[in-house]
Length: 466
Image (cartoon, rainbow, N blue to C red; front, side, top):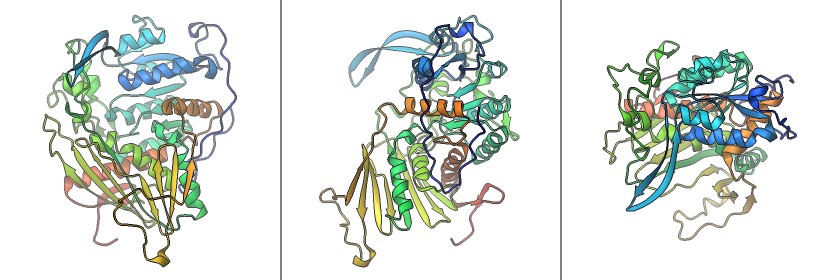
């Protein structure tokens, strides 16, 4: 394998890796060639709903990309059944197949295979034919599992957010560089060329000084966001390794992953709907805003903010959750740019995704990018209210992938083959997005503005002034 590509400059847009030639897979089954040099073996940590998409794609890409499952891990035995889903008075038949043993069967393993079907992920890291680890566990596990995978010499596909805290993000970034492994964070929207198109316009100077960015995420569900995830009687202390789900015996740099069971006793809703609990998630901030935040940073080349403030709270969805249903984050960067990120889970009306510059503005639309020229010599001629849609100066069409997650997997596998660490979402970008959002979440809870100390690489209370 070739020498890894150096880490890109922080101001440079994350380039798409060149597509490699398709690799053919011999007709022999995976079991006959464990650890074969031309086969990428993937271990799946976490076998919930999102993981099923990853498993399905690896199985789909098996022949063309010489990739195959090498093991599965989940703390729950799992369930495979058909059921009737009822919402708004309408019932539909669906299939539910999640957890350890159903995922093992899907991947072609016997549920009795104690080496490849496990509840403790560390056993899979010991397998020599595991080349890649796909992490789809709850957010509080991402850092610890990524660090352990890197230490074991594995490449990593980790779901967003890359970590839960800035300190964890810095630890992962440093470990990935030291281990010289390929890491991609699963912000699959970065496979859309729109973000690179915007970066091209910025670098050409069409926008002039980039002053402000805005983006958001909006949901509205009568059941309550994330409360639609199923809880079934098959989820109980006998089938779920609750200690391993919590991770209270594990830490990152001395900080425990979670409180112990005495603080968080077994609860089905906590297990399946963990995004509603602040011990594991910041709700719409870490789960929804992470997408537009990462894409805006990628489009502009910005990374760590200078100072961040936040506001919001739990205004309507008082169903036992302790994460906000309305959240807004504002961050200033030393480059002279501000970003506004806002989200709610109680209204679906969107906010335009826009990059504002002195000489022009970019709006992201489905299938492309619109450029709106601006002229400071004309003292702002654009209307303050849109009685009708503004006509863009130029339209740039892009050919977005039909399946962004599949596109991210093919990109990642090409990077693994070529040892290209310059993935679409490498650790430095993942860390910057986590830091921006985590600082906003903390600023909102603490009622203060935070600043990023670039030398110590940590957040602290901001002093007066810019």
